[in-house]
Length: 285
Image 1: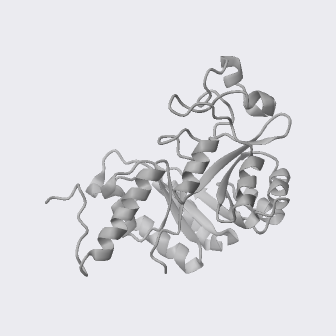
Image 2: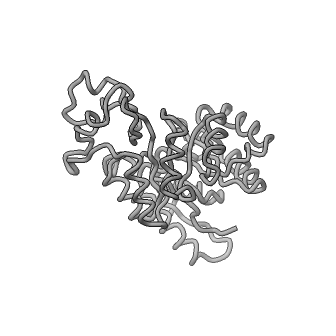
């Protein structure tokens, strides 16, 4: 197996911490860093598909009237939604991008890919938007709903499907095992959420034990399925520990930080002597 990072995804477009999330600038940021941005698809009252995680403007909109901010965009026109700035003080004047605009970026550059996280939109309309631009092979649909995934695979068979699993460690692995028993539904990718563990047992930051991550990786590899993990927070030692397990696909909220640390990891690993432990900043000198 190729030991390089196979895929890294910029969660919510650019992540939302280094640049404003789900903005045109955030998507370009992820592409320029060599990653694949995620677009959360929701439909407006006039049927336009937009990328907005929450489905309303209350959290990310700037100077939005409270009654507009609290209203789901499914009850607003696209013109109303795109009237408001979702940028930041450092990066203002950013509008909610239309899915069609993002797909045009793919059509203009075959090297670009995108992950569309299904929130609320007509599946047939989304499939049509992708199909008429001929970019299906550059798109991955992400959902936790296997019925949605199966229906979209029927509508757009060239689009890759990623099933994501969240919740407690027990819930995640129970569903993982059920999916594995069905050969992962015939879908191409699986994402596990690595939720924070306040106890930080054995210097492992996450609730899902490393042995379970390793088991999931071995099982998906045997089935020809790409395993991805989403560590909501990570520092150098945390990311190195995940990479040491053999994980080579990530979704992250900090794209630049992730790129720098993975570059460091592979640089150190390349020049390490056989069997030599890669020391992290949290290790004793």
